[in-house]
Length: 255
Ligand code: ADP
View 1 (cartoon, rainbow, N blue to C red):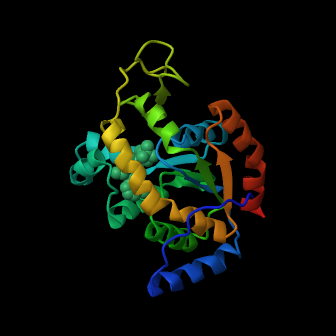
View 2 (view 1 turned 60 degrees about the horizontal axis):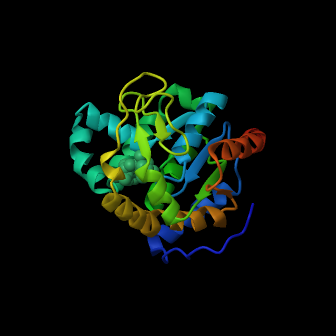
């Protein structure tokens, strides 16, 4: 685990402090059954790409709250209709709606093999709710991986990001282009630029990330659960690094 100088989180309220102390006690006394990993990092840091790779290689469920919301929007469910404009603006969906959606997903049997949380938790209250839920199921977080990258690189990357509206595959016109121009490698659907990958919205999402999500890096560092990864490296290098760490995650989960 590396130490790093990061911004201190806001002082927690009395209620949050008590909840955090409880979290800390049980994090220090972990008996996890399967790897439950949290990927933390700004939009465009590559969390989703790597979560998908862990799904392919280790059968971990990629629990991407962004993808789940986009599915709801596409299917015009009541939740989708509620959150559509929130996503388009780059704001966070309220915690209660987000947590409920995650809890419902965690109830599915495939999560028994392990989960990569991609884009969740994004607030301290989400982190506490996740912990409580896993605790009830005698599960716990194995590690939180922090993807570190600068804002300039993010804006460059996200402007070149294209996604498949059908199967959520992600490409980058510069670093990971599709084989055929603008077509998904897996299903051939025409790739799209996400509404929230426009420069104005990217900047806003970065601001929201710095204010609400970045403090979680310290939160997990304090539990001695944080691992930093240099997210400016290539997709293949980061994948190799995560593969190297996986036995440790699996071992920790079963010890
Ligand atoms: P990125 O990591 O590229 O920002 P995501 O696909 O993870 O994109 O998320 C897209 C949007 O979905 C966010 O900007 C936000 O509106 C919503 N969202 C995703 N996860 C959460 C969450 N944990 N809490 C609240 N809103 C979320």
